[in-house]
Image (cartoon, rainbow, N blue to C red; front, side, top):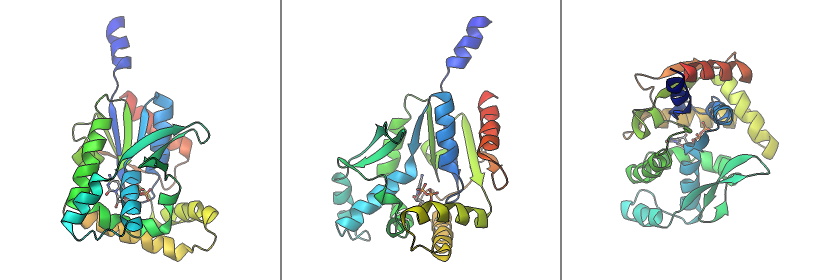
Length: 231
Ligand code: CDP
């Protein structure tokens, strides 16, 4: 019995966290990864990095051949930064963790993420990163497409006003010219495109457990999620 329990404790799982824009997915994913000693993977950062590459290189993403050639030249890695104590995204050798959070990227990322070829490219890498389990990955299609057999699937929601306020605070620190209205328009636009696209639209997996964190503190949401892990 003792051996059985020890084996269960050591059994690493895959945790997926999907949900609407800026509803605290990455905060919970980072908390869980830290608590469990798992790897956190920010799948949205990959779509943002691809968008950055497309914009910088003037890629016409309505042209499939051009997209395919561009993807061949994109290498994405995640690297732990001891300073920020976080894993950060590296695009072709350059740390782009901070640039990809700009509104310029947020305005285009959902269009880029709707492209079939872009999704196949990103999903293949995400699946590879989860091969050894022990990962928490957040995004839009992680529980439905990337890891449909994940042991724990969470779907997060929060009131739009709360989501806008949280994202505005984050972005205002870097860019005091940003307005609440711009942030709100962007979140609503992304939610619409992400949930209406043809390939892997954002939706709650049938077996996902919903957490609405509108009125939850960070500690409360972590406790709920850890209880789910232990179950
Ligand atoms: O942090 P936030 O919720 O604002 O977004 P993100 O996770 O950084 O994702 C940025 C965008 O990437 C989303 O709006 C989606 O268009 C796209 N995305 C996706 O299509 N599939 C994923 N698994 C993750 C992100």
